Image 1 (cartoon, helix red, strand yellow):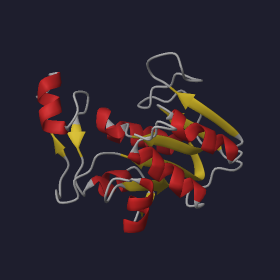
Image 2 (tube, rainbow, N blue to C red):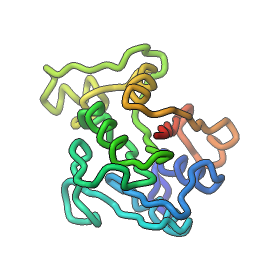
Image 3 (tube, one colour):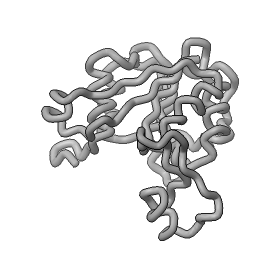
Length: 187
């Protein structure tokens, strides 16, 4: 964690991609699920048309939306940010909902724990207790660990897909996680 801005590696990677113009912010209507404060100032500095943080629990968001049943009209957003969200929920339902609310050309920005060496995502619905989930999925409230087939899940929702991965120089300079990716799905 950065002692100045409190950002984690994944938030620094997202910020780096925005600074380099790999993620377009200006003029877009954006919902940021479980918005990270360490990147909010950067998003706002890029002049989105609208920017709202959705918190499902708690009271520090602008709106309270259920990502599996988004209470917004079809084709109403340009960008949805779901950074380390999909491993907690019914991801197929959420991806379909995000696709529905995005305008044509709209994008989802998502990151999640992934083990590229696993060809299949590891899920086991019988594991429900926090200790078991922590042991199997890396955190007490996760319900899966993604394998390389996550790309198919994103495409099945209708998205085309591109990926951003930081290289060795960026890893060293910005203290990023080796091999971490940003997945960008486009409607």
